[in-house]
Length: 308
Image 1 (cartoon, one colour):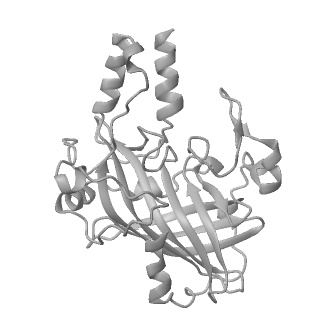
Image 2 (cartoon, helix red, strand yellow):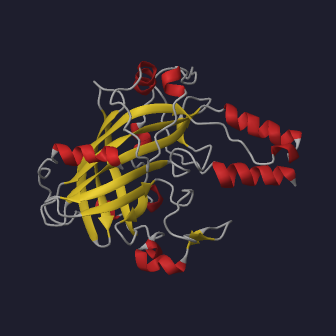
């Protein structure tokens, strides 16, 4: 019975793991990030009023990211709709989808990526392009179960093994400009968190050790806002790789069921009733003609990312 409890705890509560992975070019000899300025610092919470992290990565973090290519965790790898990022957009938290179709590392700057893709909101499909900049790399904290004095030695040993795995949280920012011509276009910007591990074979996998830390079991979490091209409108955005695993506090009773979870029917009106439809909308032409990116954001608008 206790073994079943552990399996449920570690798989259901902790390890909603995606299988987007990549092997490093060199042999898989790896050690955790250990420089105090990196390992000891916790990622700034997404809703924090604290100052943004410094723009420059610590030296050991730069070396780590030069070796392990996180772009393939961010880029959409498959053809199924489950590979698309899903989230909540605007005052009514309507469903929005993002397909990260191309994520290219900046060879001159570890942790900086050029991004192209498409998003779909209701029936509108918009191409976008922009950048993701990682500003921090941290070891995920150990999982500490409640009432661990009541757990068997077998369960404690399994948790200890879970905590020894090399799991990290990368933090940073994103800036994605919709490039179609039209009044409904704008720019998405905000903070980004990626929970991942380097396994024994040197592969990268999205995984969270704690639901209340980092990407909160969403794998990848983008949280910020959208600003219309003319600056007159602003809408909140929360976007994740794993919508079922995500420890969200946005919509109450959002999912139902345990073995085969699904979305609560009361949220069908917010677009969640089409989640299981594999229509590959990202392969179709977007609305409008793709044009060069719209006008640049002002310094004040770009700086507003720090006040999320």
